[in-house]
Image 1 (cartoon, rainbow over the protein chains, first blue to last red):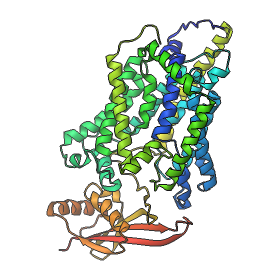
Image 2: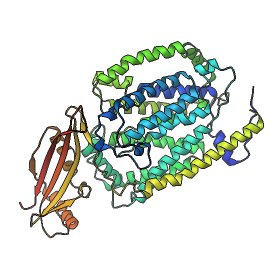
Image 3: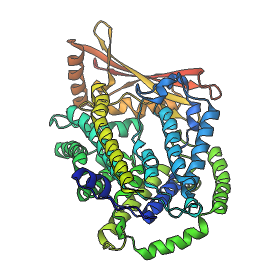
Image 4: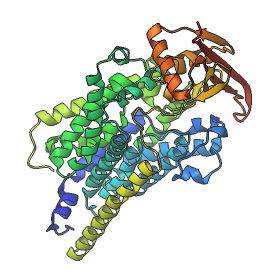
Length: 374
Length: 163
């Protein structure tokens, strides 16, 4: 059954529905990449919260945490963490994809409400909105158990990607406005340098280029950082108007995150999986999708799901027995691998994520668009 | 899906976008008007830092300028952080993590000391300051019952201006 092709008569509808087109194949591929990203880089785990004394409980006024008097008990946090892990596996295999995607977002937001109740609100919320919004795109219609179970083809939508662009633009704009109002453009202060001091002296982020940057006293350097950060974040919202501008801004964003990683040792690696949504998916050839279909025909089934779940049991036990920093995400194969090799997990995650982001940029810039796919 | 259904769907999605777009001013209100904004040089309050092995949290510090009459005038560390970042950061934190429960007198190079002294005069409104005191606290919690504080460590730094 085919649907009539909608005609969009006004600019707003064209922007909403046609800015970031993705085929059913591209949506299925992205769903698998998103789930794999979580399973390899780290599924959110909230068990560590149970170790904190309630004297640290300080939830934001407008949050789920504000409805409680303290941190939840261990059994709840462990159950929540295992539930999230199970949902991520189901998402990878595309089983009940829409409901699993929505449940994954809700479960993570519940956990984050408590992990953001220490006085610090993390910046990764945008990542957890991806499964919620993409559930409306029908990203489970290809390379999934759902595709095998359902006889009627699902209609795919690309408006959730435009919505993600809008939310990303809002997030950046909301980060830029307080800086603008707080005087970051004042030539007499160096706000970035103030942050940098905190990272260096208090938190102890001394790796990569931070020891070199601590000696930079040139006022033009630090003032340029202040201005660059404010303008970049404020103008992000304007860039959502045209997909080309938005992609250019994402490129700037990767450069921005690279600087933050090298100087402040903060990786923002979680942002790249969101940025991946906005690449030009038409550059993937039909032959790639055919090969990918053949591969997923063999792997995406109930048997594969059971095998993956069994593989994760020893990984989970190992993660439990290792001494983990309270904010690390576990169980994660990458975390365990770096732990066993004696490497710095945060550095490895930051470097591998940056390399993947730059590889994607190079591929997008050097590959011609395929006219037969969208 | 028939064309009428497609039109209805398009309309619903359009409304969803407009609703989300209207949330931006609300979000800005929460961020800006409720005071969650970055000051010029944003130096946030210290987050608790945890030493896993000892279950020790490095959480608090207090600063005092001590005047001629030995009056202790409280200061905010953010007011001096740009001059003396290391004294509020790793140095004191490391001492606490080593189990230090004592006090030290520190010395500074002449130029830094001059800048610091001028700042203290402005902040306190006094004409003479004898010393600066930086108290850093760590709280050790019972691993099995995190609500119980089993030990409090205090590490104090004095900077004398009388020398």
